[in-house]
Image (tube, rainbow, N blue to C red; front, side, top):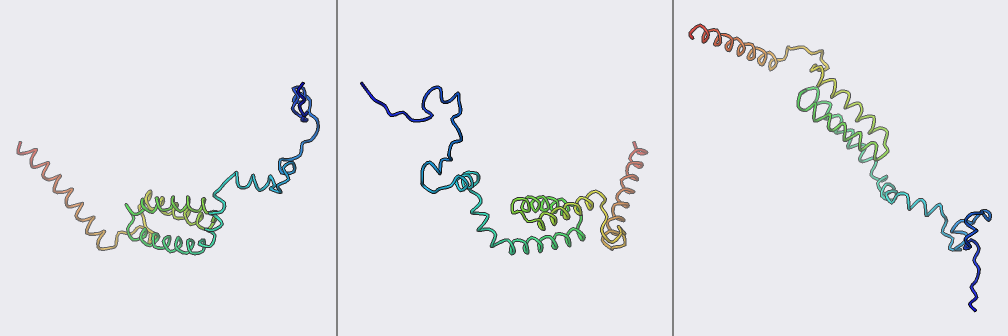
Length: 161
């Protein structure tokens, strides 16, 4: 005859009827390793890396603000393709702000995105959109002259044919 030791909770009927509140695994094992620590490390192993990165946050913040100011200056001067690049940079800043949890980088990226969108959509600068710069006058005159020449050429070729 074989004798087996009866362990509470092992019988088929014990699963149907709750026997009372069970102790947590840490209390049963006696190792002193709490469930809270186990849950903390099981949920995300990224936490220690973020703690080490906190030493670099002021440096990253300063670098991001310098880049932001430079992009803003470039956006005011050259406003077409670089505005789209600034929009991409703004989205990257927003992502970095979300990942690092820095509200200032997040707000800076949002502000840069708004400025880039305004520049792309309206095509005006912060000076009021005047066309008094020599380069803009030259470009405007060149395009007008080119349009007149092509219109004249179309009329002349149409009459010759």
